[in-house]
Amino acid sequence: MFYLAKAAVPHMKPGGAIINTASINSDAPNPLLLAYATSKGAIHNFTAGLAQMLAGKGIRVNAVAPGPIWTPLIPSTLPDGWVESFGGATPMKRPGQPAELATAYVMLADPLSSYVSGATIAVTGGKPML
Image (cartoon, rainbow, N blue to C red; front, side, top):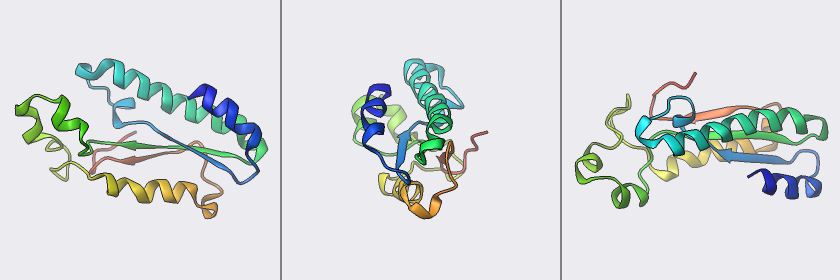
């Protein structure tokens, strides 16, 4: 991520946007997913720092932090007993669908969001990220 941003920024113009993907695990780490949670925490921190660094160039940097989202990875990596209850601990009592993340990315990419930088948008089924 660091090297990708380093390579991309010289080609970006004012008004450009970098949108990273973090996770609710960056704020509320699951001890069973420690390596994943740690890497997503680093993305959250990288986003906040890079936003400050690139503000003078007119480039916005934000992140989307999904909660439990139903992807092909879920049934292929979780034990059977966990698959049935995946997402049930959210206030909405279900996992999100990938399409439910799309509007957060579109909003962050939209030039009308020109004052949004350094933000992390939580798409978590109602589970708060503080």
